Amino acid sequence: MRFERHMFICVNARATGHPRGCCASKGGVEVASALKKAAYDRGLKGQIRVNKAGCLDACEEGISVVVYPEAHWYRGVTLADVDELVDTVLVKGGSVERLRSPKHPRTDAS
Ligand code: FES
Image (cartoon, rainbow, N blue to C red):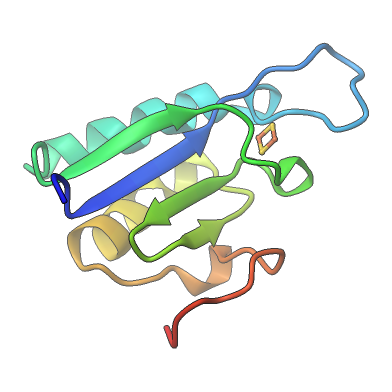
């Protein structure tokens, strides 16, 4: 594996009034940029990868974030969560329990 950890943040945009809403309208682009900057500010460039993603099919929970290889899904992520996610998930390999998505079954014991 090239990267130890890979984080995807939904930045999908839909038209105003779409019944599913979208993560872009909730600030997905800003959250994705802040996560990437925070990760790279901690010297993680080359070890981890932070990428904007299209719809992750968890729109009602957005802003949606998923991290591999753990396959940990996070929902309702805001700018206020950025430092905690980077420090706990990307630096330490842990999980931010209060943001974990109930929609996605856990595939591990963490
Ligand atoms: S629009 Fe973000 S998960 Fe669907």
